[in-house]
Length: 314
Ligand SMILES: *[C@@H]1O[C@H](CO)[C@@H](O)[C@H](O)[C@H]1NC(C)=O
Ligand SMILES: *[C@@H]1O[C@H](CO)[C@@H](O)[C@H](O)[C@H]1NC(C)=O
Image (tube, rainbow, N blue to C red):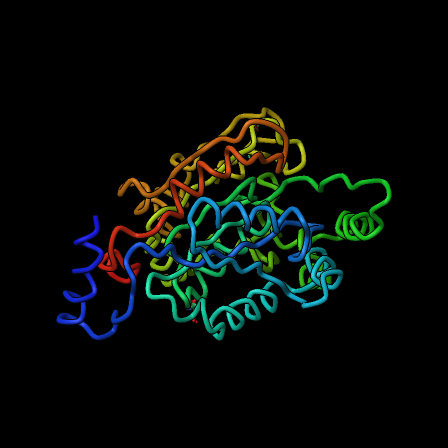
């Protein structure tokens, strides 16, 4: 291992000055996008970051935020226009001194809705480029029901109340975050017309954006964890891009859907190269333990073998 570590930068210097200074064995920085009702400064998120550093020493961790004020950041998980929110995140990462200069790109970890938003980042921006994406309990194929809120969470209740009233109005689509990934397979027409985020990011409309597919297909790994007893994000199979018939409960797997067959967003390419993992996490929505996270961090976020293994060359 040691001679290789030493020799790699020398070889790279001879081939391309661009990679100069890229130390082999350094884990890429990790960006984490939290879920609905959470904030970037929360203790739970800090312990996840600490664990990532423990598993892969030297990892720089950045928690994505839409507001430096944690309570404003929490509010932004319920209220806001995802197009605007994503553009801000793209700008923040592209101008971040450490993330934007990492020679091995960055890794990305998305919790719940943060997972489909990170996928949006990859498809629309991907600068700095993501190496591996891991999502836990994300709603990649949307939610077909609105989630229940804690009885004292007025912000959640307000958001869900407004959405239940008129999910397809452009007013709601540009202001309520979960509405922008609402998707009822029995009622696709208004979804295709009005969805401000998911219908676009999943390339479900007639005109497909080829950049989206190319960017997602450039991932080294995309691992999707589904919680086996998830009753919060409905249907739970959305975590695997599956579709569930609301009457019969019949599950249509990703591989049986056009988004895969016609490879609208690059998933089939990833799958055929063995770069798409369908994983399960035992338990309820976002009930994570250190053991499972440790395993995921070892498997997906460990340092590149050498600097040739650069996202741009995959
Ligand atoms: C496709 O997406 C890219 C990245 O967001 C964007 O720059 C481009 O304008 C989009 N192309 C079309 C045809 O919408
Ligand atoms: C769900 O199943 C029912 C009964 O088989 C069928 O009539 C309906 O079209 C299905 N819905 C979708 C969206 O495929």
